[in-house]
Length: 235
Ligand SMILES: [Zn+2]
Image 1 (cartoon, rainbow, N blue to C red):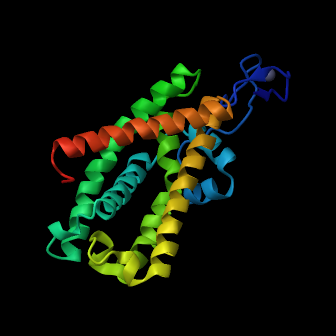
Image 2 (image 1 turned 90 degrees about the vertical axis):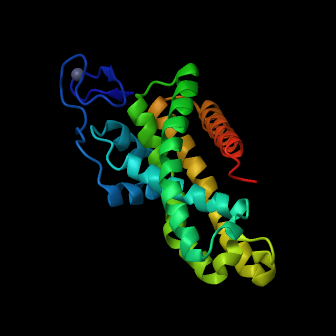
Image 3 (image 1 turned 60 degrees about the horizontal axis):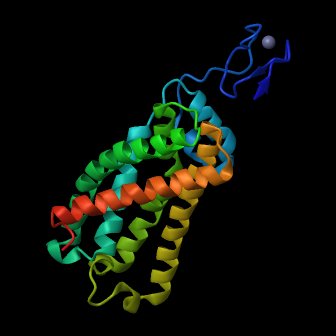
């Protein structure tokens, strides 16, 4: 809650004018600046999620989900060792990029819907658009990993990153452990950001936020795997 500086009335965290005396409480935010917001979410996540909810236009949310999808696509190619299906690394990268955008859009819809529903059931109180933007901006560490670490992984292992024989670990064990460890750290960081974002935007406590985020990710992941296996993509 925010106390009005004029009449001391308690107002909603995201109110811009006082409900009692109409005094000005905090700045309206028309737009989000991409790089500023990505940086700030790392530096001070709580206040940045606050700004995201306040922003009238949740700019770049769909763009961030597309990049998140590309990261998921590369991860699936790596995890399920799908490299043998492609003629060259160049070919694989092309497929990961365009299927990734599709996966990103599917995840944007599915994850947001499931997340928002569970959050609302537990007393959450933000709009679907804010849920969507909170999840999109929470993927910042994963996107950083896609932009900065994946190129190093591709240069280090090439096609061997996506095949099982030989396993990339046997080629350069230390590089493999360090790079994959970094990716996992970034994924965990994104989950932590989503939990913080849930606490700020939906105004639910820590345990409920953990529950909402983990269950939403779990259900979305299972749904994607079910769709992929029914289309015989992973065999
Ligand atoms: Zn007031």
